[in-house]
Length: 249
Image (cartoon, rainbow, N blue to C red; front, side, top):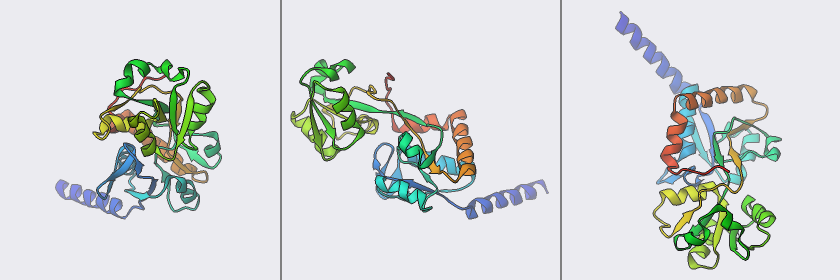
């Protein structure tokens, strides 16, 4: 009888999970190691975290890929329930969505060629006079560089690939971009000649976001996030995909 009751309970739980509404997760899978395609499957910090959240709240995570600049509109339109895509908290975004508690610190970092570590290995060296600094156009990195590196020569590039190519060719001394680009260097074999300072030049908090009219969902997901912190799941996921030690300013 006891075994039968256990079986019935297991079937009930399985049925509840099978028919639960999925947690529709909006993600831009072009930001390794946070979220990217491995074959046809989306992997990374955000993918693992989404699946863990879904397990905790009993709603299987459904990852919906879309461009980063379309995530907010998709959330507001109700096509997704949550944004999990390396989005940083900003006061402007907070007027449009409800951010959950931050799950990861990020910021701008400087990347250099390995053969120039002696010159640019220290964080203060970014501020050297006449340093040739590359940035991605129209990004937080460009805004920061133009405001803070007043003695540098700033060159904007259309994307990260173009900036890193210029750095490897010696056209610039440093490339300043957000932390995921530096984290990628630590896990990829594609750029053996480049290295990051792994020092935050700015301080940004990454957080997941839900609609402002969904306070119950926000509270439920914050409780799930707290559980992930308490039982070590979040730390395990981050360490799995970002195996570097970052200096916090």
